[in-house]
Image (cartoon, rainbow, N blue to C red; front, side):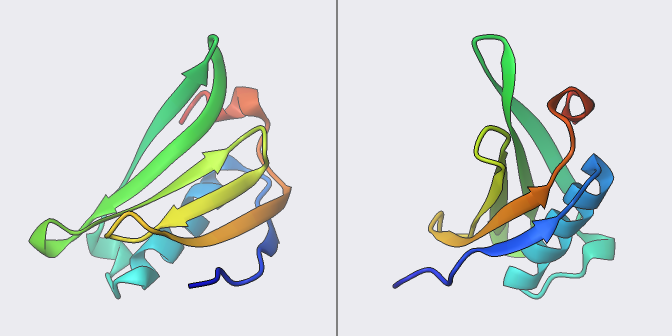
Length: 102
């Protein structure tokens, strides 16, 4: 399976980015965002914030996830089987220090 060409979006704040990721993850499995909480975590490399991890959990142990790679300035989406489902490049993104609040 070939991935679709990367979309480009502008998400200037962490709240915008999280809302976009939440909507996209819920769409993969037709889940209602109002009833599906978004979970976040961070990845640090040499003490520096490198990525923010997002995931949602649905019925029947369903779990989809996304990774915002700060250095690459893109979001990689993974479906419930762990396969990469989509990639989105960011034309505008939150500052890494702002992302510490993730």
